[in-house]
Image (cartoon, rainbow, N blue to C red):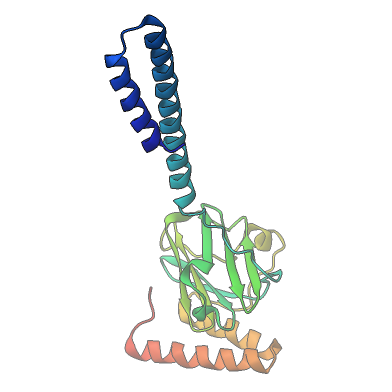
Length: 226
């Protein structure tokens, strides 16, 4: 029975109760009045509960992150050079500049960094470099995404110090890089690109050519330092 009907019944019982004079009739009306009041109370509680459930159902559903498709490719090819303030790592990934910014993530510690590029052409790419040769400034380090390239900038904790190797492992293995950046840091990158160019396929060679042209243009404009 609807709450409105119960309310009308209650009002009518109250009227009858006021007019009743015989005890038996008054007792019966009083019992009926209590019964109706209890039903009204229960109805109100049910209504409040349904309203609360409705509000809960109207709350936006939790956002579920899309499942990353494909598989993760470990990045092994890269180049690096340095300036007085930074150690710069260059990773070539075709189309990386077209993915959302949040899909390119780099995490730094004082002696390491790891790169994760998600959902690039149906795959994810990762690169982890531990045991850097020397400490870096986590706060001062960053990344830049350029055309087909991710540039990782590791801020040297001690500026104006030369890194002969990128990691302690390279130093222990005595695998000294085949290029020299002592006189001109940009020359180190050029030598790295030349080596990758010689070993790379046609796509890699086109990428290297583009990077070489851009680097020379920057040198011409005096924009050689980050």
